[in-house]
Amino acid sequence: MFVLVKRIAIMRIVLAALAVFVTVGSVTAAERQYPGVGRDATPAEIQSWDIDVRPDGKGAPPGHGTPSDGERVYLVKCASCHGEFGEGGGRYPVLIGGFGTLKHQRPEKTIGSYWPYASTVFDYIKRAMPFGNAQSLSNDEVYALTAFLLFMNDIITEDTSISAANIGTIEMPNKINFFDDPRPDAQPKGDPCMKDCGGPIKVTGSARKLDVTPETGGDAVEEGAAASSAPVETQVAAASSGDAQAGRSVFNKCKACHLVDSAKNRVGPGLKDLFGRAAGTHDGFKYSKDMMAAGDKGLVWTDETVAAFVADPKGYLGEQLGKSRANTRMAFAGVRSEKDVLDLIAYLKEATQP
Ligand code: HEC
Ligand code: HEC
Image (cartoon, rainbow, N blue to C red):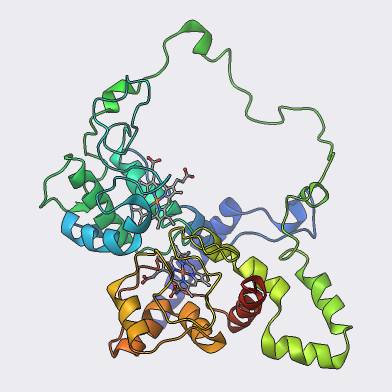
């Protein structure tokens, strides 16, 4: 009996807490300005957006990492663009050095020479890198990468572990040169307006009319409807072989690194000659040892092998070499949806045709 009473009491507390959360955290459907449009964000959704880490370390998640942990991740996931020593490849940003250049005609602004807060290094990498596969890193990996980059910039020692406890306390060399602008015309005039500031809002255009919104995605429902009115044979063919048009947008994930209609190399090899050739043999591209080994063992790019590779690059290449995961230089987690893979192959076949 006692246990039951206690349980009920706990439930009451939980319910009371939930009630407080609901009233504070969201607007009820009736209170919404445009009822019937959208829905309330869930706490989990809000949490997944709320990833900022402030200069004093507020918001830093649990986890930790040292420079040597970070070096390992860096070489696999970052060096292809930023260079093995952070020197920047091609036009990708330099991450290390540049000290004493801020007054030069062409200052070299890096994390080390320019950035005022170490927390921004964590926040930026967590939010945006690796380019093309943002937010794929664990908190430990991001702490380790932050530690590696700070160490390489001579800001911390080799054995410093970075975590929520110290990310807000690291003194960055250029912090002192960031200060509030004291000039009179840079001061705010009166109280800034924070609510109902403008007049009524008039919608004068839409992204779709201006043609800046991709054709696929938002229109998926309409497109689906159009597709189902196609003759049955074409539908079946499309289902088994993939839809090149849809595959073109899947290829957006690859674009940062690969040109599909040219033999030119970017971060990744040019794909123009892909089908029918052995893995790791595109002219003038510096492949990983594992990719070349897979080619030597007989891996040739066909519909099936490309599909299996893009679905799980490290795993599939590893399989070819009899280990669980290969060290491919392709910093890409893989295309998860089977339909996306089929569509992508259809697009690649079409786009790589001479
Ligand atoms: C495919 C190429 C690519 C890869 C791989 C990549 N980056 Fe970047 N990185 C970029 C580009 C492009 C920018 C500039 C983005 C911008 O200005 O919007 C950038 C910017 C940065 C910056 C900010 C530099 C500055 O001074 O403004 C940091 C820090 C950074 N990357 C760290 C990393 C780390 C750490 C990794 C590995 C997890 C990584 N990047 C992987 C392309 C890449
Ligand atoms: C962050 C850059 C990056 C992204 C994004 C990327 N790749 Fe790659 N890709 C590479 C690199 C680097 C290699 C070379 C890998 C190696 O040497 O281990 C590669 C290799 C390949 C190969 C083997 C080519 C050969 O010459 O043997 C194929 C096929 C491929 N990528 C397809 C894709 C497709 C399709 C996508 C998108 C779903 C994609 N990649 C996304 C960088 C990238």
